Amino acid sequence: MPHIVIEASPPLLAAIPWAPVLQSLHLALAEPGWAALADLKSRVTPIAVALSGTDPHAQQLVATLWLTNPRPPEMCAAMMQTVSDHLGRAADTHRDASTWVQCCVFLREHPKVHYLKREWAAPPHR
Image (tube, rainbow, N blue to C red):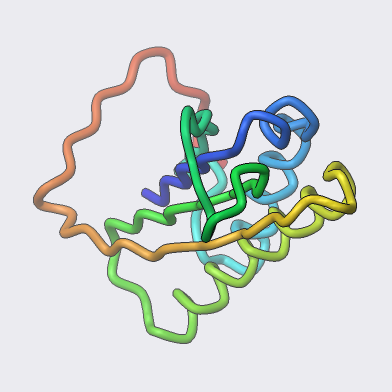
């Protein structure tokens, strides 16, 4: 059950068309078989206050990729790189070229026994 939680500075939050970025990211993670498309979940939350170094105008995109199923280290690294690549392209396309932007991806592996999920009216799995 991969979850991708993305925190974005307000200018990036407003500038990036998130729905197509997330859809493309989900397809890129599912296509090689790293995750079932219906299991991928992403959300974008605003960063209320942030500081990078001493630059009050710097912006951040910070993603945390949560995994509940064990995967080989190479697959985890490839999934992290895919998240970074998609966010990097989104930032490249929609940022102010003079503003410092940092994009970071964290990997969190979470034991499946510590994850509970309920669903209503779910789409059929393909």
